[in-house]
Structures are given as C-alpha cells and as structure tokens.
Image 1 (tube, helix red, strand yellow):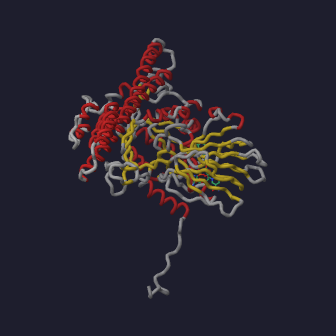
Image 2 (cartoon, protein in one colour; image 1 turned 90 degrees about the vertical axis):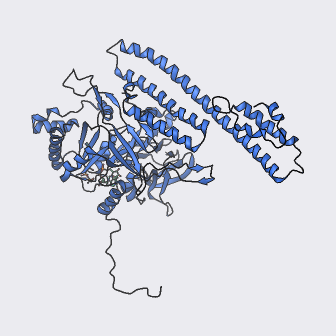
Image 3 (cartoon, helix red, strand yellow; image 1 turned 120 degrees about the horizontal axis):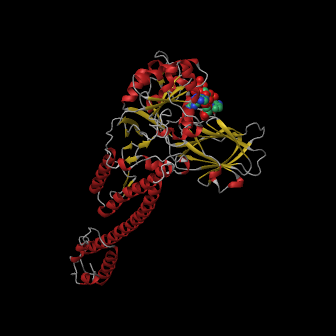
Length: 587
Ligand SMILES: NC(=O)c1ccc[n+]([C@@H]2O[C@H](COP(=O)([O-])OP(=O)(O)OC[C@H]3O[C@@H](n4cnc5c(N)ncnc54)[C@H](O)[C@@H]3O)[C@@H](O)[C@H]2O)c1
Ligand SMILES: Nc1ncnc2c1ncn2[C@@H]1O[C@H](COP(=O)(O)OP(=O)(O)OP(=O)(O)O)[C@@H](O)[C@H]1O
C-alpha cells in the first residue's frame, strides 16, 4: 500500500485497517511498503486533530501504530531469513556442481579411495540438511501462528518418515569414512534426523571389511539396524506439545524441554552386528564370553566382533570360532561405529569406560553386564544373559544417555593450534593433580573466560554426572543423576576451608591453566588413564562433547541410578528407629 493511498483515509482510519490485510501475492508483506505504511500512519496521526476526540479514537490510533510497527518487524525478520536461505541455496548449488564433477572423476577410477566419495556425499547431505532446516524456518516467518507451526512440524515428520522409508535414503550413502570425527563436529548432525520428541538413526553403509575372508563381499552394502529414540516423563504423554522457553504472546515464561525425560530405544530394523568387549585376565569373563558368542551366532544369527586378544582366546578354545570378526590394526577401530549395532561389555565400570574410549565419535548402544565388584554403570546380571539380550534385541529398551567431556590440552607454545594435540573424550572425569610433585598444585580456573578461582591443593576434578559417583564423590562432590547435563567442579584436598564443589551448566567451556609462577607442573589424566604433563603456561580446555554414551537400563535411568547408589554405596543406610520410645505429644 502506498502512502498516497493512506492520505485518502478518512479521519477514523478505516482504510488503515487494510494495512494488515493487504498482502502481495506470495502471502507476505513487503518490508519497504510496510515501512512506508508505518511512516504514513505516523504522519496521519500527527495531522489528525486528536484534541476533542473521544477516548476510543485515541486508543484506536495507538493500536494502529502498534500494528504498523509489528508488521514492519515481521517483514524485516522474514527478509533476513529469506536472505539466509538464499545464501544456503547458493552454497548448496555451488557444492553440488563441484561434487558432481568430483564424483565423475572418482567413478572413473575404481582404485580411488571410497573415503573421498563418502565425504562428498556427506557434505551434500549437510547442505541438504541445512536447507531442510531453513525451509520450515521461513515457513514460520511467513505465517507466524501457532497453528501453522504444527503444520510445519507435520511436514518435517513426513519428510523424515519419507527418508525412513528409503525415499531419500537411497540417495544417502552416509557416515563418511572420515576418521577425524572430532575435527568435524557438524558430521554429528548429518548422521541423525532430529525430531521434537525423537531421533531416527538409519544409515546405509558401505562395509569395506565386512568379511576379511571374502574379497567378493568387500564392497557389499550393509545396512545398520535402524532405531528410533523417543523421550517421555512419568505419567506424561511423549507427544505432548513442546513449550518455548519464553512465550511472548501470552507474556508467560514457561520452561523448555525437561532434561530428566526417560529415553526409550526402539529398533526399526533388526540389529545384525554385535561387538563384545571383555575385561582382561578374568576366567569368569572368558567363560561367559564363549557362551555368549556361541548363543549370539547360533541362536540369533548375528555377526560378532571381538578384540584381537579375545579372538585369539576364542580360536584357542575351538577352531569353530573362526567366524568371529576382529580388526588387525587400531586405525580400524575408528570405523567400528559404522558397523556395530550394539556393544556388550563383560566386566565392571572400567570396561564400560574402556568401551566408551574406543569410540571417538558416535557410540552405539552399550549393554553392560556386571562382572566386577561395584558396577554403577553395569546393571545387567550375567546369569540371565540370554533373557536380557533377548529383550534388548527385541526392544524397546530404556537407555541412559551419558554425557561425555571433550578435553584438549593447549600448550603455551601452540596456543592457536588446537589440532596439534589429540583431544580426549571422558565418560567419568578429567583430573588435574600434582602427580609425583610434593608441592601444592596451583591452577587458575576460568569458566567461559570468567575467572572462577585458583586451586591450591592436590588438584581438581572436572567430572560428568556419570562420573559423579566415582573419583569426584570420593573428593566430596555431590552425586548427580547421570542424565543431568552439567560439569562437576570438585577440588581434591583444597588447602582452604571454604572451597566447596560446584556444578556448572552443560554449555560452558572450562579452562584450567598452570600459571607461570607455579612451583611445579601439573598432570592431567582422563578416566584414570593417559597421563599428560601440563607445564607452566599450558592449559586444559574442557566442554561437553556432542557424543554421549547410550547405555541400556535394567529398568530405567532413575531406577538404575538409585539402585546403584543403594546397593553399591549403601547410601543413607541406617537401621529404622523403633516405634516405641518418647514422643512429641504436644505438637
Ligand atoms: N579415590 C577414588 O575414588 C578414585 C581414585 C582414582 C580413580 N578413581 C576412579 O576410577 C575410575 C577408573 O576406573 P577403572 O575401573 O578404570 O579403575 P579401577 O579399576 O582402579 O577402579 C576404580 C573404581 O572406581 C569405580 N568406578 C568407575 N567408574 C565409576 C562410576 N562412574 N561410578 C561409580 N564408581 C565408578 C570402579 O567400579 C572401581 O571400583 C576413574 O575414572 C576414577 O573416577 C577413583
Ligand atoms: N577390554 C579391555 N582392554 C583393556 N583393558 C580393559 C578392558 N576392559 C577393562 N579394562 C581395564 O581393566 C580395568 C578393570 O576393569 P573393570 O573395572 O571393568 O573390572 P573390575 O576392576 O573387576 O571391576 P570393579 O571396578 O567394578 O571392581 C580397568 O582399568 C579397565 O580400564
């Protein structure tokens, strides 16, 4: 609408009402015309002799001003979203053209590494995913109403369900063979489709070494078992409507998605490949491993992977175990997550830590059997392994998504070269202590660049909530439900009476620095392993990793956690006071 049209409006502003209705054909208001309209409304209102008019007219003119302003803001927002979408589209087209050319080259050379091919497809997928995210955003801007948000959600669900049925999947050869998952965090988001109340994970994988005995099988396409995650609260429907953190429309602040939801894993195709990891030097573990491998292969017809050490043990037991698969060198471990549907651990908590440490990126669901002395993370009993595995393979199962910390050592000499040191992913904690030094450690601690404190004592533990029942607990930290996202900041023997432990939110980056005036260096260790020297000027950066460790629950994460602190630690165990004796009768 032009300003001149507005000039002809009568003094009651009737024509003004058409500002909000008048829209170009594409259904949205052009930002320039809105700007003019708003200006025109201002001018009109100034020209209008307000004095002497009744209150309704004044109210009406105020309302017009508000409407015009709101329309301008909406149009500006939409324009910026459109510009962003156009930029993504342009990048996508550019990448596609480049990749088609590269793909032609790759297909012309059969000896060329498939790695390259997968990487290209993965980049394409990333771009596609961005577009998929941007389009519903645009849709929100244009319509801007609750009801239409629901339509957009339904569209996204349809799209993912189409993928699930293979409409898009056939185009997607996912999970690049790129080993450096840690260097390309965005890969994580291209590997799973995300929905409001669930995640689907379904990938078509090219298995390069599915059967090392058969060359014919080398290029066989292997489909990893697909599953769906959904989360729910006790007594609440999983499809409940998501609340925004802040609702501007009604002026009410409501909380975001609750983090304490139970997560359930439902297989959408049958698991085919299982990796069994075992605690070394244990006779009971070895006996159980033999029985389990046999049962999984003969009864469940599953492919079984074990560590090279275990393969040697199994073949020594019987040559029939030659079907069991393993790897020859450690570099192959980085591909395991692409082949394995399920990991089974036979041991204690240390074996679960070991299993987690093998996956430097996404981790398949872990079923931990207890063959240790404590077992905070090992809820399954080995005597009933057939029933347990039957129900896990059938699904659905409750899982605990255990957060991990991503830790990087940054040397004073290489402050701007993070990639020079390989990062560590810890499931329990990273500990910075005085090692063999007899001096107090002196550590400067920062949280997102804000100074926290200086630790003077034996050291500091930065723990996950899963690790809260391990070393951090022994150092006086709180026990925290493993599904609570957060970083525990627990000093070890601080030489100060007031140094209480902290729990920091999950989104922060903690930086621990050994100051130049420190009398001695410090040592960092990761889940109790891999000690690294931190000299004066060196720092350790620690933040929440994007790849949690999913562990299967016996009942659910809360029940399992409470059972483990009751059974494992005898938490708050006290004889109940008897009924007889003195009473407070006056109250
Ligand atoms: N003073 C201490 O309590 C202390 C000292 C050093 C290390 N640790 C813990 O040991 C862990 C390494 O475990 P490991 O098995 O390789 O070494 P380990 O064999 O020395 O076992 C240490 C003990 O910690 C228990 N543990 C491990 N993770 C746990 C968890 N999340 N919750 C409750 N208990 C847990 C184990 O069950 C085991 O009993 C480290 O990550 C650290 O948390 C504890
Ligand atoms: N597959 C493995 N290869 C090498 N080391 C392993 C493996 N599994 C476990 N470990 C190591 O063996 C040690 C003991 O393992 P674990 O904690 O599972 O047994 P445990 O000490 O008997 O159990 P608990 O701690 O409950 O008493 C740990 O330090 C762990 O890192």
